[in-house]
Amino acid sequence: MRLPIMFLVWIRCLTLRGDAETLSLLFWRSSIRSCSGKLTDFPVCCSGRPSPSERRTSGGPRQAMAAGVVDLKGVDGGTDGSDEPRKLSREDWRKRKELEEQRKLGNAPAEVDEEGRDINPHIPQYISSVPWYVDPSKRPTLKHQRPQPERQTQLSDIQKWYKRGVVEGRVITYFRKGACENCGSMTHKRKDCMERPRKIGAQFTGKDIAPDEPDQPILLQDFDGKRDRWNGYNPAEHIRIVEEYAKVDIAKRQLKAQNLQDELRFDAIPEHLDKEHGDESDEDKYADDVDMPGQNFDSKRRITVRNLRIREDTAKYLRNLDPNSAYYDPKTRSMRENPYSGTGCAENEVTFAGDNFVRCTGDTAKMAQAQLFAWDASERGTEVHLQADPTKLQLLGEAFCVRKEDYKKGLQESILEKYGGAKYLDVPPRELLLAQSEDYVEYSRHGTILQGQERAVARSKYAEDVFINNHTAVWGSYWRVGQWGYKCCHSLVKQSYCTGEAGRNALVDPSPLLALPAPAIEESPVKSLVELHQEKRKEEMKKKKKKHKKNKGEESDEEQKAKKEKQERLQKALKAEEQNQREADELLGMDERKRHYHSRHDIVAPTEEEIEAWQMKRKRPDDPMSSLLFK
Image (tube, rainbow, N blue to C red; front, side, top):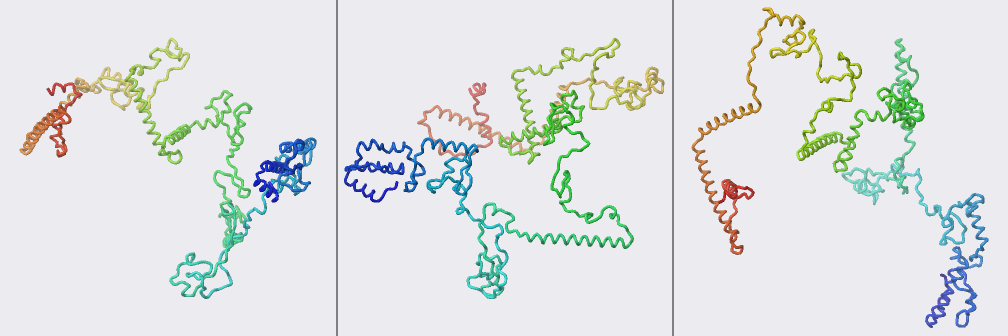
C-alpha cells in the first residue's frame, strides 16, 4: 500500500483529535485504491464523509472488486492511465479463450515472447507469466524459467591444469629472506618442503638453492571434472609410446631380414617361406589380435558373437513347425517346453526334450535344495552362503538332515509307544495278504506262459549263474552228509572239475579207489544265547572271587589298621549326626523368640565321614518305608 507523506500526516492528526469516523473513511478509501489500483473520486462533505446518495451511486470496495476492476497486472503497475487495469467485456473474454483453444489445437500461431521464441500453448499461465516482483509490465515469456547467465558458475576450461616443473631461465645463487629454510625456494615454507631434510639448510650454507615452483592457477571444477581420471593428461605424451613401439617393429623387421639373408647365403630355403609371407607372419602377436576361447572376437570391428550353434545341428524352432507347439525365444535362443509333447513321442526317444528337461537332470535339484536351505538358514541367523561357503553349507545340510530324521523317528516312536499299533506297520505286501495282484498272466496246461509277462526273479548284487570247470550247477546246489557240493556231479570238493553222470554213478556203486571215508562229525547239543551268557557270567564271577581272595590274603597290617580307624571315625560321626538331629528337633519344637543365635559357631568344611553319616541318617520323606526306619 503506497500512501503519500502528507496523507500519513493527516491520518496522524486525525488520530490525535479523536475523529474516529473520519479515520475509518480514510482507511476505506485507501482499501479501494489497494484493490483496484485506482482511487474512486467520492465527493466529501465538510465532515469528510460522502453523502448517502453518493454512497449509493459509488457502491463501496466490495462492489468495485465485483465489477472486475481488480487485475493482477495492475497491483504494482505504473501511475499512468494507460497502465491501469481495464475491465474485459464478455465478448473479449470469450475471444481470448477461443484463441487459447485454437493455439492448443495448432490452428492458430503460437504466442511469441520478447526474444522472438514461440511459447508452448499448453504451458500453464502461472509459468509463462512474469512474476509481479520481476517486472509486471512485460508480456508473457519463459526467460525467467531459463538459467540466468549472471547466476551461472563459470567453470575452468578443460585445457587448463596445474603447471608442472619449475620456472626455467632463472638460477638463484643466494638465500633470500622469507624462503624455505631447507631448500631455499620462495614458493613454500619449511614445513611444506618436499625435499629431503638437509643436515645444514640452505639458510646457513647459501648453496644449492632450489628453483621456485610456478604460481599454480585456481581451478574451479564441477563434480565430474574433479573425478575425471584424464585430468591434466597431455596427448603429446602418447606419441612417445607410439614411437617406442615403432622402433621395436623396425628392429624386428631388420632382424628377420638378416636371418633370411643368412639362410639364403647357405642355400637353405626356409620352411616358413612357403606358408606365410609379409609382415603378418610374425609369431609375436598382440593381445588384441588373439581370439579368446569360447568367443568369436574380431579386433578390427570390435564385435563379440557368443552362443553360436553348430550349423550341423537342427535348430530348435525347426523341430516342430506347428505354431501351437512349444514357444521359442529368439533373444535367448531357448525353448523351455518339449517340442514333441503333442506328437506321442516319449522323452527318452527324442534327441531334444526342451531346456526344462535339462534343468531337472543331474544335480540341479540338489543345487536348488541347497540354495533354499541357505536362504532359510540366513533368515534364522546363520551366516552361510552357497557360493561363498559351499563346504560349510554342505556340512550344515547333512547335520540338519540327520537331526530331522532322528526327530521324525523319535516322534513316530513316541506316538507308537503312547497309542500302540506298531504291529500294523510291519505287514507283508498286499499281494501276499490277498493272494492276488493286478498283473494278468495266462498259462497253458504245460505251465508255459500264453499271455502276460513272467514275474521277474529277484537278483542280488553278486554274480549269479556263473558256471566254472564245466559244471552245469553252482556250488551249494547239492547237500549230503553235512556238506555242500555240486548238483550236476554230486561232487563235494569246491572248484573241482565236473565228472557229470560218471560222478553220480560212482557214488551209487563206489569202487575201492573212489570210496572216501566220510568225515566224523561230533554232534554237540546246541545252546541258546541265554545259556551262553549265563556261563560267561559264571566264569567272570569265579575269576573275581579268586582275585579277591588273593588280594585279601596279601593285605598288610597298616591297611587293616587304617580301615579300623576309618570305621571308628564313622561311628563317631554317626553319633554326632544323631545328636545334631535331636537338637534340631528340639529347636523346631521351641518358640522362635526363645531360640539362641548361631553366629558364634565356626563354619568348617565337613569331612568324608561326616558326609557319609549325613547321607546314612538323613530323612527321606518320599520313601514309603521312612516311617518304619525312624520309630
